[in-house]
Length: 550
Ligand SMILES: [Zn+2]
Image 1 (tube, rainbow, N blue to C red):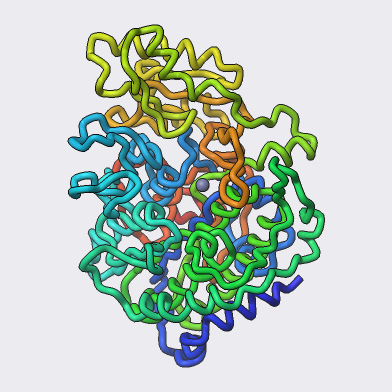
Image 2 (cartoon, protein in one colour; image 1 turned 120 degrees about the vertical axis):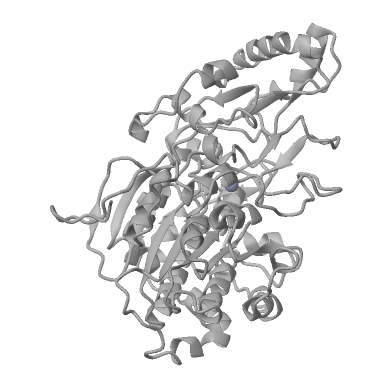
C-alpha cells in the first residue's frame, strides 16, 4: 500500500529542493569506479526481529536495500546495548570496550565536580557541565571513525553527520568530521563556531514550521491494521492505537517521537548533499545519518503496536524518496543501513501475545544503599548506577580499605533478586579476552567483556534475566519499553549494503556491526591495515573469483 500521506508531507517539506531533482541532469559525474559518497544510516532501535516482522511489506527505501547484500542477523555483539555504545561500533570497527563508549552515561570518580556521572558526548572539562546539561563533544571517543580515516588520506573529503540525537551524530561522525548536526533547543544545531550551511537555516526556519503546523492523524496501512489494538498499561492509559494524531505542537520531543523526526533529519541530509555537493567533487565523501524516531517511538509505545508499524511504513517511504534524490544527482554512492541496538516490546503486550516470563522489574534495587548502609555502617550514597542493570560503581566517598567488602556485599545482595541473571565482577571480566567467535555463539561473559573498558566501566556489571523490562512503572507516551540488555532481542540488528548494480546476496549467519568499517573501507579502496579493530571485511560479491575484501 502506498503511504500517500507521508509522500505528501515529503513533497511539502521538499519544496526548496524540488529543483534539486531537476536542475542537475548531467551535473554530477559517475565516472569513477570508486563510490564517491558513502551513506551510512543507523535506524535506532531497529531490531532484527522488527525488521523480519515488516520486511515483506516494504516497497520503498528498505525494499531497495533488500536487493543488495542482506545480513538479517547482524549483531551489536556487546552487552551494553544502548544508543551511544551502539553508534560507536558502527563506523569504527570496534566494540565499545575499545571505543571507550561503554554506556550512554557512566560514572567517573576522578572528575573534579560534585556530580560524578558523565554523558558519553559531553565535555566534562567545560565549566558548569553536567551529564544532563552539557556542551557536546567528541572527547570520549577513543578510536577513529571511517570519516576520520577517509580524511587522513584525503583532506578534501567531506564528512557530514546528521542525527536525531547529539550522541548519534558524534559517534557516527568521529573526531575530524566537517559538519555535525543534531536537534538542540531551537531546531538543529552544531558545535559553537562551526560553519552553518544554508540547509541548516532552512530546516530550522521553514521545514520545522511546516512539520509542526500540518500534522494530520496518520492513516493505517492495511498491513498495520492487526497491530491497531489498545493494551492497558495502568491508570487508565493504553498504548497500541496512537496515530500521531495531534494538532500543532511546539514540543520538540513530540516531533522527534513521530515520523516527522526522521523526515526532518532526512530532509536536512538531502539538502546538505545538494549544498555541499557531497559525492560530486571527485573525492569520496561520507554522509552519516542517525534516524532516532524509531527509538523514541519504541520507548513511548513499544515495538508491536500500530505506532511502530506506521513509523516503519513512513520511514520506508521517506528513505525511498531520499535515495531517489541521490539518483537524480547521478552520484556514485553506496548505502549501508543498520541499527545501534534492538529492543523489547512492553511486557503488558508480550503477556497478551503468548510470551511467558515477560515482566517489569520488581522492587529491591531502590533500597540497596539503605541496606548496605545498615550492614556496613557507611553513609549513603554507597553505590552509583545509571540504571538497575549494567555498570555499578562504588562511590568515591567509600574509604579505599572498605571497597572490596562493599563490592562483595552488594554483589550478594543484588544476586539474591529474583530477576537477576548474574553479577559479573571486574576481575572475572578482565580475565577474559575479547572473543573472535561468531556472535551468535558468544557467552554472556563474552558480551559483557566486549563493552568493558577498564578505565570507564563499573566495579561490577549486573545482568537481568531475559524479558525483564527495567522500567518498574511505565510512563505513558514517553517510556513504556526499552533495550540495553545482553539478550539477543537487544543485540540483533539488520545490516544492509546496497549500491547501484549490487548483486543480491543474503547471509543468515551472524555478522557484526564492527564488520561494517572494514567492509566499507574495502569498497572505497581505503587501506586500514594499520588500524586496530575488532571486525573483519564481509565479502559482498557472490561470485567465486570476486571479492571486495583485501
Ligand atoms: Zn533507546
